[in-house]
Amino acid sequence: MAKIAKEAKVSPATIYIYFENKEDLFTKIYIDIRKKMGQAAINGLEDNKSVEEQFKIIWHNYLTYSLENIDFIVYRENFEQTSMMKKIQEKDFELFNYITDLIQRGIKQKCIKNLPLTLLTSFAFMPIITLLKFHSQGIINIDDKLINQASNLAWNAIKIIKI
Image 1 (cartoon, rainbow, N blue to C red):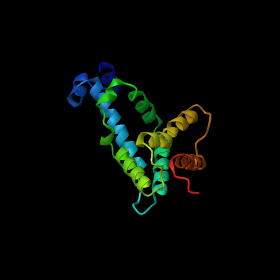
Image 2: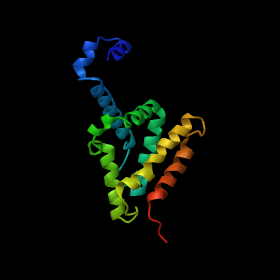
Image 3: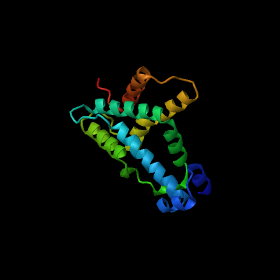
C-alpha cells in the first residue's frame, strides 16, 4: 500500500480511509472496471431489436470499449486468476444479467441453441479476449469490418441453424 500511496502522491493513511487493505483496493478496482465495461457494452440497446441484433451490438460495443481501454482488460484478466475472484458474484454485474436474459430469450425464441449458458457464453464472448491479445501483439488490426466479421462468427457459434 505504501508503494501505491507513493505513486498516487497521497499518504498511506488516505488510502486506508477508502480501502480496508490491498485486496479490498484491487477488488473495488475490478468491480469498477466490470461495471464500466458492462455499461459500455449495453449502451444504445433497444428492446425492439432482435436477439441477434442485440447480441451483435453488445459484442461490438464491448470489443470497441476494450480496445480503447486495453489496460482494463489486462487488469481484469490478471485479477480473475487470483483467489480474490472467490468473492465476486457474476450475477452482481448488469452485463452478465443482460447477456443471461438475452441468451435465455434466444433459447425460448428458438434462435439460440439450447445448451448450458456457460458453454454458450464461452463460445460467444471469449473470442474477444483472444482478438484483443492478437491486436496487442500486432498480429491483427481490429477495425469495424473485423469486429463485424468476428461478431458474425460468434453469433454463428450459438445460433440455431434453420434448414
